[in-house]
Image (tube, rainbow, N blue to C red):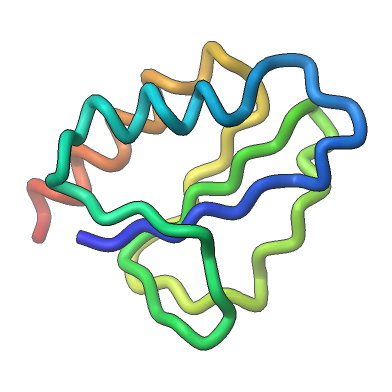
Length: 91
């Protein structure tokens, strides 16, 4: 399972976005291949990590097979994990 990661620009982060990604990656411990999203690559999932409620990161240019997962608060980590787990089960 591949998951592209798209961060916002970080102009007004209200939590540690990198730590959120680290927690998500640790949960999947090698079951999901996370990488910084590139426009010419197709991903199973795309994780969009915003630092605030504006969630300004553009992501429409990325190719995604299954779904987009958007988080903009530390409390969204569990929801993101659940969505990724569901995608793994469907694969």
